Image (tube, rainbow, N blue to C red):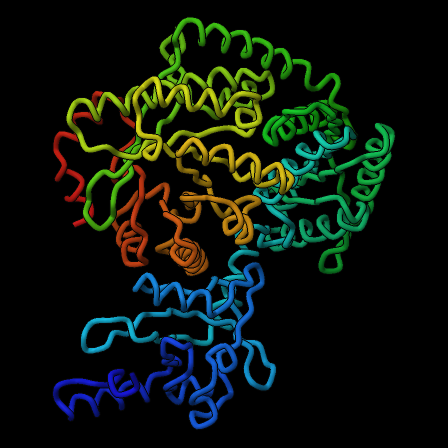
Length: 578
């Protein structure tokens, strides 16, 4: 195979090929079908710490020794898969190469089959490079995406995720969850009179002060402006919430020294105590905001508990719950469909079903305005059943009208999944409609991954038995990580639109998007980019080997009738991707 590795019809071309490979900065390691090293270029020798003479004839696993942080998949298993399937594969994204001297190097790699003159697979080539800088930049980008740049406090993404974790833990053992929503009094006057430099220094001082008064298990977050939130999981008693609120208030009253000038500051604090299950992060923050506003209206420099502040909020929730019940019986819900496009061919390969509420007064409401109440009241269960049934019905109608069968994506809440009989109900809908279960994709939120491991295994196992495909929605902003994507039968990863928005202008977001795409390819998962709004974003994703995407660049969510017209013109989307 060594001869064949550089074998070209023209001897001079063979010589030039050898010179080219020898001069590469990437490591090249060739192995035969016995997984024995038969060639390595100088770069591979530098990266592994083995000379060519020492490496020749040794097992590849000895010369190219790797470990992974979340995946201990052996090199031999990946190479054997390459030899068997005759296609390129990669080691897990977090693979680390252990040099001969014990130094660990993060690497990027690709393992490709090599063929003999008859076309049979004769071995493999490992192409690898030092990814230390890229890995550092990626970790830095991840940190920046989840932290406030001024104070380095966690931002809203982390806060909502940790609120979700605290709420999920209520199902295992009931306890109290507390939240303090803080807004500085008179901060605008400081900014306007002394400048933003002083204002920024005040915000950093407030951040340090808040971190100094909370427990280690608490989370201090900056929402933006002069608003801060403290999440207090597993409080021992209601009194503990008010004691900490008073402590925070007292710390805010202490003078702050900035550039030799003493500034006096106070704060308005909303205190929320919550022990109900099925409360989402948005509702808890709304209640905290309402309580904080009540403190501000009362003159500031005080703590206001949730009881009186949220009475109007709860009243609105009760009215909305009744309206949702009416909407179900009066058939006020509608589905719109957003095309998912193959970025290579421009063809529509799937659609996402998106719920809308057509109210009697003519308004068309998006889910963010009513789903939190639907989940709290458990009306999400019959609403979700209607969405699934209607989406599958429409998919079958398109197929019966002669259109190519495309993937139908439907969002599913964790509460629906955990309902007894959900899986048999799902099978019944698919069977009664005569649908192909392999063309249905359930989009799960990352909060599903917070379930206990055995519960997750049982849940995913039941879902896969139906034959449908599973996807993780809004990947990258919540709880998911490589271990979950590896260990559970996820078919598709959807990249959150917040990363796509700045992928052509912010290097950090570009690196994150590429990393997610490469991870998906490495783990053999489909990847769909959400929120594509410009040609530049589409071209970046296409160049980064993302196969599918959706967003307003191609089409907003449209009615079934409008999408039928688009499907009737299969070349229409090619104008966007060509």
